Length: 289
View 1 (cartoon, one colour):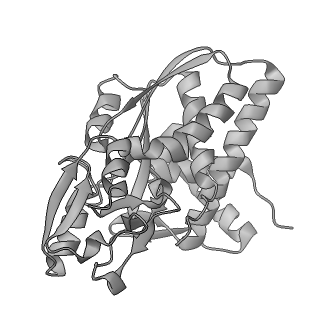
View 2 (cartoon, one colour):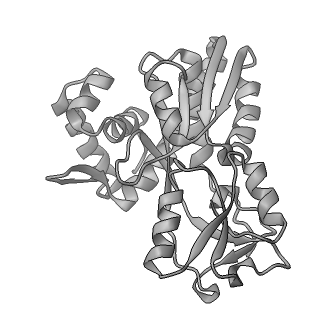
View 3 (cartoon, rainbow, N blue to C red):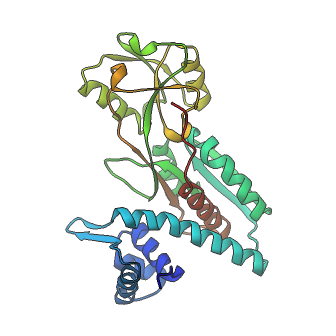
């Protein structure tokens, strides 16, 4: 009978997060051979291949990616249940960083769930560009960060892939203007180079009509009807129009949402990271076309 062993799932996650069997073994306090044997047993038990090995390293199969998403949720729920039963509720404060356009989709539901489970933990949130948040975790200025990964140099733990959409307000046709007027986050935004590259490759002339460091500023600029923007699925208002090749706009690459946790993170910070993992593993509502 097929079943899921949480210890093996934890080892699989450790391999993914640390990048290999050796580092994963150190992380979980087991030998490399023991970890390899448990993953082989898990694959045999499920009747599927979870990992691909190549000269470039180890990567998840499509089935493996799906299992890891479920595994993070299972282990997060298990951790919360054990903490509740033992009465070992963390205390203190956690410093969380994330881009402004992730707040409504991921922070709002996470904070409600986290606060209910850990009422004695205070969360302070800092919103900034992803390229600024990662080094702040390394320097100890943040405990946890949810960020957009650099596709050319991916770091951190991959939690989710988000589609990047061209968007415009209903009742307006700014995409018909030449050059195309854009509302974008400032230089340094990790989506911005991909937006520009897609337009340049398609031979589409464009200009930046509005720059804003806040999601509210981008929304306001687009609502005027003067600009087009590109936002991830989680930040796309359902009432806005989605644009594409039929509107003369090129396809955009998917963006990757990652998580980085300070090496010496407190129990409270680790619980918040677990809650974020579980939240992002849940399917997001699809905005209307």
